[in-house]
Image 1 (tube, one colour):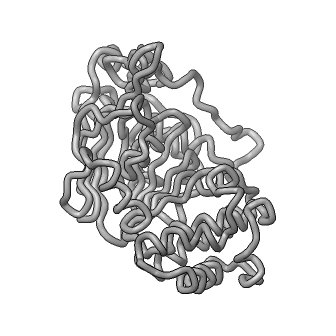
Image 2 (cartoon, helix red, strand yellow):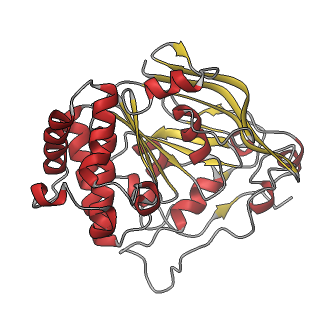
Image 3 (cartoon, one colour):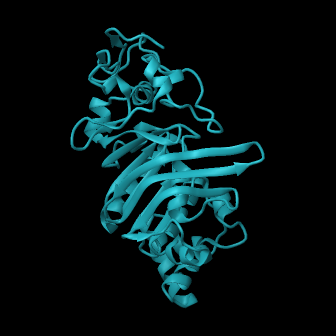
Length: 347
């Protein structure tokens, strides 16, 4: 097993108090596997990823409890020197905004070469030759010229390709892609996702892709984990999540995706309300205040993780044997439409 997280809890100490950003996340990742972490801003996706890279902002950020194992080795208590040996070599990261992540004072070639010199023991000439290969691999044209240019001379899509080249330069076993298409237009998004998918298959690299858009991951991920309020509320393979989602938050995410088969009457359905305050997280389900099927128990007790089948689980009281029977609102047009509810009322 390449990566294993068990009951990971991460907090940030601020002047206003403790922000409980991640409140018990558990999942594993095998070599060559592609997993998507999906959820709206502030749900803990990026913080979870940063902890796997040892990039939590210190001293404010800290791992309260839980375990992070990389190839069976406990990493939650690594020193900075130990993390430096991991970053780039075993785990690469594609950051959300390449314009702020790339160094504006260094050429693209120098930035790709940096990790190669440090982790692979290459000299400058060898590293530049490898950097040229990487730019070709991510399909950047005129590589000999581009190698010596600065980030501001690249377009947004090319900067993101350069970030992918940096992340993959040392042949890491895991790449974390944190919202890799957020700042790009739709056409370039598709190109970058296709590139990432092709490179993953070619290099057999494991990938964790972080996004707020379920539509983005359909073509690349093998498993999807939906996060909300610092916990994973639903997890399963593509078929489980896209065709048999069980959690009301996942239903809301699905209903907010634009579709070609919607009629004029089928308007996009936003999720009303706001995310929970993680300074004082609710005792029960974090989605209770925004859920149309909320029951009293939802506000007082955290729902356990119910196993739907071997690959699918969801943390929702609606799956309890004593709960009212609720038909998924994703029924019309195959997986969209109005809710059909029997006996459930908002608490």
